[in-house]
Length: 393
Image 1 (cartoon, rainbow, N blue to C red):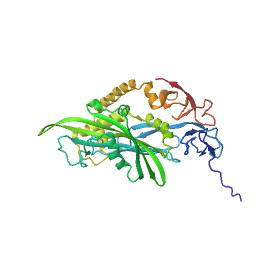
Image 2 (cartoon, one colour):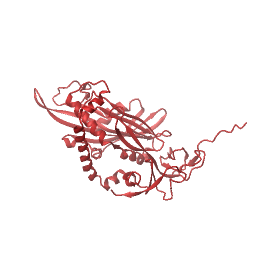
Image 3 (cartoon, rainbow, N blue to C red):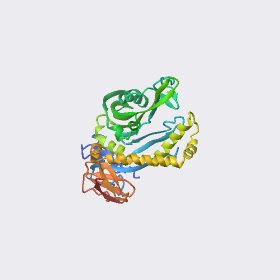
Image 4 (cartoon, rainbow, N blue to C red):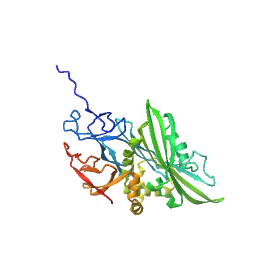
């Protein structure tokens, strides 16, 4: 009797550092020794067949998330590395009129330590007259707490709440990011408030593995005068939001910076969902709702907001979009490390990592970037790939 076991995945060597690189059926991997992103042609015979030459590059696939719990609409879309796993979504909390929906998810490498994560936003409220309840209690769903700067928010709020339980956690460095509020299109400065961005790099151990991680965030403070029996005071509604994190093996986080930058810059919020969300926020505020326990009432509130309010929110979204698009010059692309390429399938310009020079798009919305002009993903592929031309628009 033949007892020969089938061979496992073919192992090749990383073209950057020479380390062993177990291959997979996705045609893409991150070297766990040097952190380089590697692509190869998918062999027709499966994992047991030797692939084509390994090259530095990215193989990407589109991901779309539908808000099934609330509006039923597409919430966002983004590009993720081929073979990576998505977990999370959107949770509605109608007892918090100022922030009734919280988006939180992870996109992780199943064969490595790399992970991109969006963390839940934090919503706070404060009255300068000191008329609210004690610190830490809740008022209309928001936590009662006076505003802090981004450094204090990351140290005192984000890390204790979202990274508790980790072993040997250390803060390696902190850095202000004054341009981040504008990059994420914060509305706080426009409304008379203020916004501040920053990041923190930490190291820690988890299940015997040493990691490094960078967490980014923005503090937004919105101000409104209110009349009290003691005169005019100021109501502060503030958020610690736009929270996202990049994780990698200790000492190799920087090697994946380009990949993580690509993922965050590819994120696209659906303007129709945003308009519906703003309409729901406005409706909840107008009704002074303190407690709504049934998640099934989202659809009812959505219907009651009226098409006129949603259309106005949509017009506002596109108006701001046009202003920001005019500011998004080629200098902005250089800062973010991306280039524009024309996708012949979608007939629009998409942003992909810079420095490779060659990009391909397939008929399912996937992309490959490579520095090798001879690489052709059509070879031994059942998908239709077309080369993408650089675009300045």
